[in-house]
Amino acid sequence: MDQNWSVVHPNAAGIDLGAREHWVAVPADRDPEPVWCFGPSTPELEALADWLKACQITHVAMEATGIYWIPAFQLLERRGLAVTLVNARQIKNVSGRKSDVLDCQWIQRLHTYGLLTGSFRPSDPCCVLRSYMRYRDELIGARSVQIQHMQKALLQMNLQLSVVLSDITGESGRAIIEAILDGERDPVKLASRANCRVKCPTERIAQALVGDYRVEHLFVLRTAWELFHTFESKIAQCDEELARALEQLPDRGQCPSQPLPPRAKGKKINAALRQALYRKLGVDLTAIESIGTTVALTVLTEVGADLSAFKTEKHFCSWLGLSPDHRISGGKVLSRHTRRVINRLSDALRLASTCLENSASALGSYYRRMKARLGPAPAVTATAHKLARIIYRMIKHGEAYVRQGIEQYEIKYRQRRLRGLMRAAAALGFDLVMRSQPPQPVS
Image 1 (cartoon, rainbow, N blue to C red):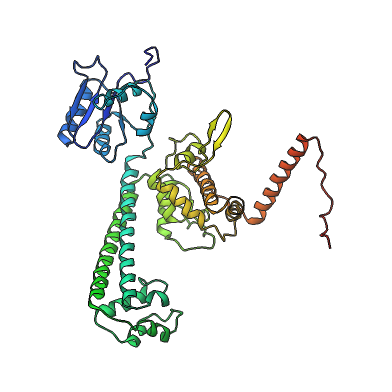
Image 2 (cartoon, rainbow, N blue to C red):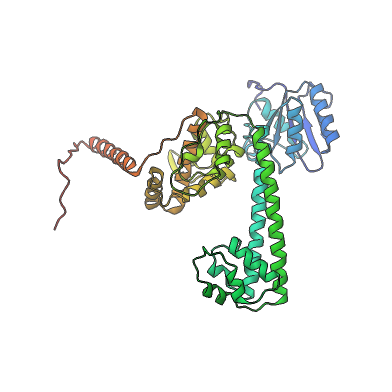
């Protein structure tokens, strides 16, 4: 490496993380032995921090290896060191001679000359909230598995409960399953437990509840039923911890004296959670069509209310993996596909985009136009990209969302097409003349 390069971090160290040992390298003039090996236990990590402090280290770079980096990252950051978490792919892209023992020295050298860029990590309070939110998603997934087990057991007993009820875990479905587990076998009595608001006739429900009650299937049904309630209680406990952690975040906006304006027609949302998210983010993200409290909470937990780490909305969309990743060779674009990233916020925005299929809004019209032009999957990505840009502007600049109807969107879209046609005509040496009246259809 050219030693004449400017040194960006003169007091930099590199750490090669592992499950059983961490190799650490500091500049050669800081210690007679600039490479040391430490264990992963907390006392050894404390000794690692003490050694780095004794060597006058201020910046540390480490690879994002599994979850091994989390204890070391948090401890070193707590000790006042500027820790940079680097994607392993970025280190591999910088060519150089390496060996397993000297990985830490290579990381230290790259970080000294400023060749490593840190991965985004929100503030520590947001990380606490993010841990609860991610574990809540896992609990919901585990609960869904038990619902599938219940459906399978019912079908194996030829109880067509999922045919007559849209949700077997609703009020009517729960009452019927509880009665089955209590020993009730009369289909008429079971059907009478359905709520009066169920559209399916009672006779049809009773006909669907005539089945073959085998012992082994009843055991599976009972076990899945008990686990379903266990996961529900754990989800409720996780919601309580999530609410407590949410209150610990600093407020960016004052609590409005009056309730927030009603949302557009759609699914009802938790008003209290909506108010809390407004205080923490400073803006009302739920005013955007298809954005509910779940997506807004995902924004808060995954990126937080401070987007200063992203210089522009293009950087933000690139981090989400929603912008085109142009592969250019010889001045020719070979590929425009988006990067494959694992990002929960990106997934949430994609799911929110699918809810705009029948929306009578500008975003809904945009989604349908992209779907007709590009296809379903690219349309979802394009709409999620548009939602990400709107969210960035609202949080970064404190802008309020202004709803736009289909009529206004179509007018602006027609004007953009007209300007494009005029530029194309001028480039070819023609003049575009507007008709005073629209053309009449040919009979």
